[in-house]
Amino acid sequence: MKYVVNESCIGCGLCAGTCPEVFSMNDDGVAVAIEAEVPDDALDTAAEAMDGCPVGAIEEA
Image (tube, rainbow, N blue to C red; front, side, top):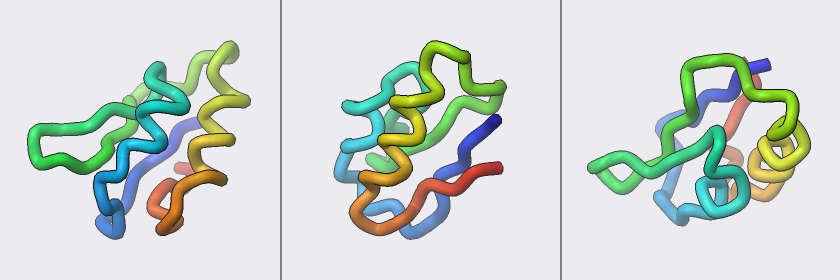
């Protein structure tokens, strides 16, 4: 499974705080997801980050 962060990201950092194995903040202050498959040990926290996004900017790819 992979995730993508769409253009509606407001840069709150919740996803990067919840699952830093998958999400990080770029130089523009918005979130990005790793391009590789989500590691098995991060599946639950990555899903939690997606569900917790206040603007629904995280999608399954």
